[in-house]
Image (tube, rainbow, N blue to C red; front, top):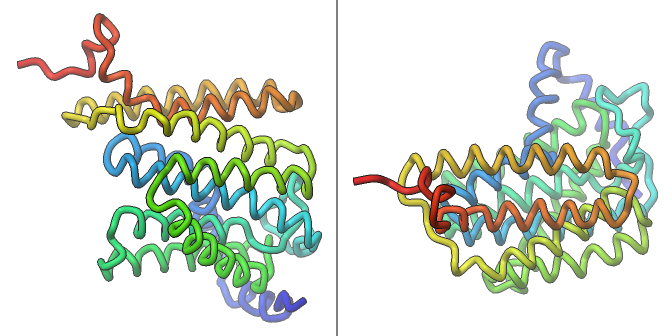
Length: 281
């Protein structure tokens, strides 16, 4: 299997050392934390249904990537070449960051109907390319891993767009199904349980999407962001305690994704809880 090892080293060596921290920062844009925060904020403030659909795409991609990585069982570059270590993920083929960048950023362009916008499509493509390149520069993937990751991401994006027909609920159902082979092939570990729990929570939360009100002011959007980020921090903190409990990981990630999706319901509550979210006058 061609992983382009020598070409990867040429690419990494061509980048001046002073630019490596820049690529280390860029690589986070394809990671789970950055994508969760970005998609959550977009969901709370703007393109709600479209963003929920993209969240389902990313969870499907997570399950598929975990199964592929464990199935191929190809290691990352030697530890001596890695500027960022991956003790919990020894497998390098294909690149999960490359898949995620294509599915997430490309998905936003497609789902928000901005595919006809040249600048939006170019921006998504450049961002995905930079994330993929960063994986080679920091030494955690070979170029072949990234190129195959791009191909897998494009295939997933095209297939999911057709299969879901724009329905987030259907997207989360597909993501739940995709987590099963990940559990079978990769085994019961935190990442596969996250995929399963998040997908289940997304499916449950998506049943109420049509009942959610749109934000009516900048204040309301800001309060949703503050409350939502606080909720994420609390759940993620609890997750660190329950990381060794399989059922707990599934349940907490279900709560996390469902909570993110259902948070706008807070703007419909009456009484003292609802007061900060309503405009006066």
